[in-house]
Length: 400
Image 1 (cartoon, rainbow, N blue to C red):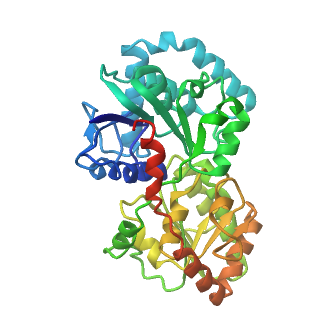
Image 2 (image 1 turned 120 degrees about the vertical axis):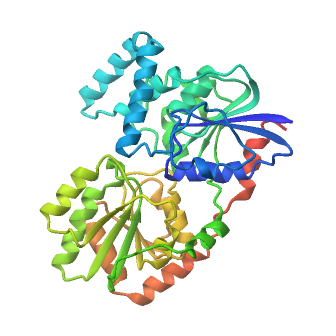
Image 3 (image 1 turned 180 degrees about the vertical axis):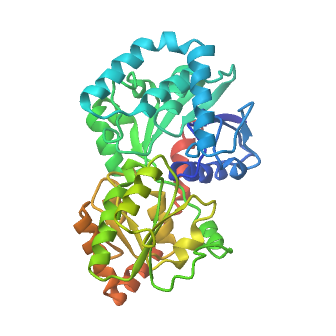
């Protein structure tokens, strides 16, 4: 029986994590002995791991990395690595070099530095695997490259490489040491190969494996909007981070209200930008109009009940949220950026808009004012086959 190790940074409520769980379900326990190691040892999706998968973490916290409790747990993990395991000394030159570089560029991305600390400070295992999979960029990729014994090693890329703040120097050129690099979209591949042209022959697209049948069944479960609002509902699903551009969406909502649009915009997700976004909402008097609902384990009833899905982000790899919305027949407005433009066909199943308050506002108005177009786009979105079960063969052929 072949032994496979899959690593991931966290196991929180996010697209890549959901896609990984779908991939785990495709691995036949009669053929493969599958182990999973979560680098931070935390995340609320622990209960969704298939029963045949062995979790290697000795301890595990089900708290979200985006909650106050979760952030404390994460900092304890980092401090343990820095102090108890001495990584603060060995990684000091690395942290200083890249910390100063980020300051010079005016873009402080502390998480990009901490991934190296978490990777080097994580538990190591003596087992030799037939295949080791790093399912996320950052910590899990560093860990598989530097600390795992395996006959074959691969990594997945879910983001626009440069936009997300990565570089060859930051990564210590770890991708050169891997046997295969899987990107979740053509645009992610193109972005990556601009930085790593020498990885062209071993880089290919691996589309997210999505369980559309499961999504449709969960959409029928109790849940969804609990307020008594009777008007037009707009929905966005995604973490409250800078990447998701909620600051621009809030300004767009202000423009919609000024134009007399009767709508309410809901956001499912949690993140470090909540306080900043709440302040902006309050300043613009949108407390009843732009609602931060927090994270939920089952977002699908919300998709099924909304009138319009909006995904206006600064950049993407390949959005699971867009695929979920399409599965449930949502018409949508998405920003014209990497990832998004590969998933939505303008004038067929959605609207591409500029990432400005005016651009988002106009995109929403186009579908708000035309019910026929909205219904047609939703029907076209619902026809898309996004399950992609054949993708698993790209991974398993490495150890056949």
